[in-house]
Length: 525
Image (cartoon, rainbow, N blue to C red):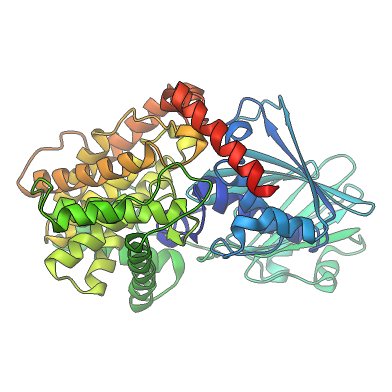
């Protein structure tokens, strides 16, 4: 699937600690719900003991998101914090098991769904930033990422199916055929589901024993013959040199997303303006003070603002407001408020806080701030295309490092910098965060995540100014992404969002974890 700014980079609009846990799990649950035709009385969730989920699925919100998805909710539903209770009220039983499956991806969900005498099995992975892929259904390999309406026709015998003929006959976007010696799966992707009669007419005498219809869950759909003008930073720079050397990064982002989404320029900018409005409201909510029982840190944004107002802080110029807004957004996230994963929930604050605070200080209007966010989004496209935002595969360098790179490019854009300066700022910011581990204390995405978001934002400001003043990034951004990916491959599991290493393994962290577990048990009682 070709990356989209609104699918993969800036979004989803959500609640919860982690996009790769909460939002992705919710989307997986939505697909599972459709697979069962909305009728479920029990779900068995299994995780590989060598993955990240056995130690984090509860504390980082995978359970909450999955249950919400099974109930058909959206990622920003205000009932999500109590989704387990709502699942019970819906009569859906749940159980968990940990086994050695040898799954290659650390965020692998194995679901066995049951309704009366019907049982279905689904395997899916969370790939970072709320994105996911269903890779297996009932033993047949599939690839479902939520960007199409998917129709699955099952046959209890091997049959000859010409995928090209079926695609043309149905005017579908894509048709695949899978199966084994006893089963044939006809997998049809399109902009709408296909009815039984239309499928039977194309297949001939064979009659499907079951047809599943799975709705798209992403804001931007894919479509047939989809192409984009570039998919790497070097390709973008080459494209701009041919088209318009002085084209700003935000305009290239608009061109990319127009090609990817099919939206016109006004709608692309308007869509980002809507996201900016959500973020501005979230900042104000954080400044007003937040609370939540399952939380390590209390509200701190208010005390930082008071210290700013009383001039008790070092004069750091624009940076103090960025730190304030970063803190506010992180506290909204930790209190189950509405945030935007940009590019992830764990790194949800650095980029938006930087853009909103800078916009206020420079007197920028909402459209200009949205353009900066689009510029940042295009930098994120290059990361998501060639690597990942998931801390479970890349450590915090994949989350905070990506956020810093994106924010640095946005700041250069605000100052009217060149494409070369924007890409250099992004590269320097990412370079500065290579090797950063993910070690959430007590499994909660608060400590040291708040500090790492502040560090990412501070890094972005410094690198933007360095690039604007002519500093040499030395390593091109594409090569920096490749280096980060290589570093990630050498990281031990304990340092990739498992809560098993770094600060998460300290005595204090374990004490906090036990305290929160006891408080949660008392609250449920």
